[in-house]
Image 1 (cartoon, rainbow, N blue to C red):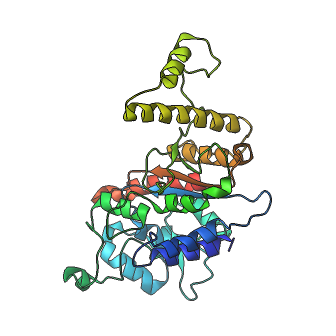
Image 2: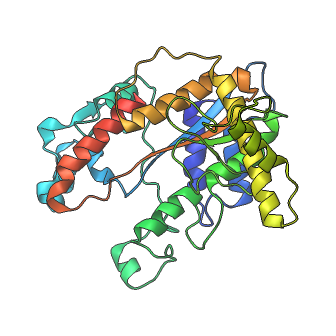
Image 3: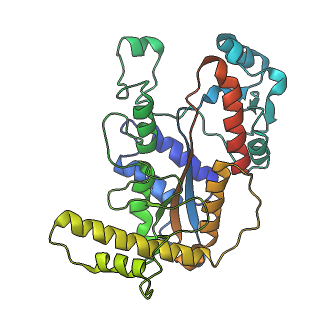
Length: 336
């Protein structure tokens, strides 16, 4: 399966498995959708995760607009509900008789949905089983560990494992299965423009972190052929063999990092991007992702996994409507 809708459908099926996407068979289904092992010349696929840290109130993002369902939405939310007149209608073909809209700050995403370039995957999350309030209170069904803890739930979203701790994320586990398609490419299959994250940690692979701004590499290191004192000093440190295992591992890691950053910078210098992005932090991050995807031929890769993020969604009470409006506008503009 190679089209986006089939991939999203498989992803939703796998995420509902009781054992989470960590189950090997479910992960194989996702990998089959994301990265067919037989690929045509020039074939390329990238999976980009945009993670909303803090916990977005998604009931204000995708909103039912038919009279009965809007009343069910509006009643318990009281002053947190979006007025019906402000909701942006979206065209969805697989919900006959039911209508929906998006938060008023998400005009860009509305345009993508109505053009068939974006879709909503609803009713997905880190629960282990469908759970009613009574079942939760009486512990009648298995529950995720530390339910209602922000940090734990964010980790469970990124790992898709809700019944135990794990050091891997489902993006990294997908990368484990498809990295061979990149052959001997020197650049990483997983790249993050938002620092460390669990989602890109695999069993055999980890993410390479880059700045969302122009320019990679060690600012004062000019390369192996440089003769300035700082470059010579750094090179001497890296070439020195260390007896201590941790010291040698540190040296090897820094050396690989320098080589990878140089390879990425060289690749980035071969590509240009005419698309104008908004002047926001998230847009800067996604613009770098787009530039790196544009440099895929120079990097010699056919499958990649990217991670970007935006924080601040831990909103409370009176501040929610204004803050969520700002955040969702930034998300919508950057994605569009």
